[in-house]
Length: 211
Image (cartoon, rainbow, N blue to C red; front, top):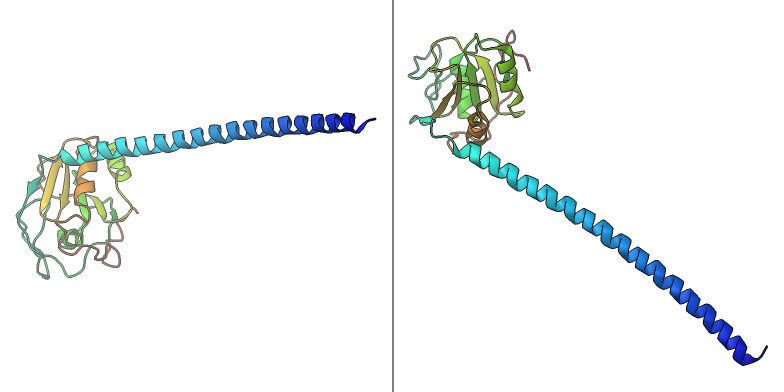
């Protein structure tokens, strides 16, 4: 075979190899582009969900026109019963030991619960006759920390009352979206006299703590 023919055969093989390499590169590029598109779509979906979710939370938090406010500075520590102005109380003097946050199936002492409010807890109280399904809805709505859920002995302005230090909201239903808004706004909120103070290590009425 002449050297000219040898060169042509080699060139043909090189050209074929280049074509295969280019085709493989195109396939790889298409795969990378497809994967990138999927990742971008997933990120976009997650960001969109977060934006809409946050918007819903802001909407719920903004619908707090029914919240009553009371002017209380950090309360003094006292022994014994306290005659509170509100029912449930929303601030004022309280026991030196705070109530441990959690879910209770029996009423808790006001004086200890108010101290938990001072530490930034939200206290959700309900009339003892509230349906079990509604109590469960309330419990399911609670974050893991800085909340107290309990039935309440005494007069309340409605079936369910949410209380933070100096703030209170009455709702008629466990499905009311303002429950989520109130918790988001006031749990460890700017109204808290002692933000970050403990919500454990205090007192627990052992017979009534559910979790």
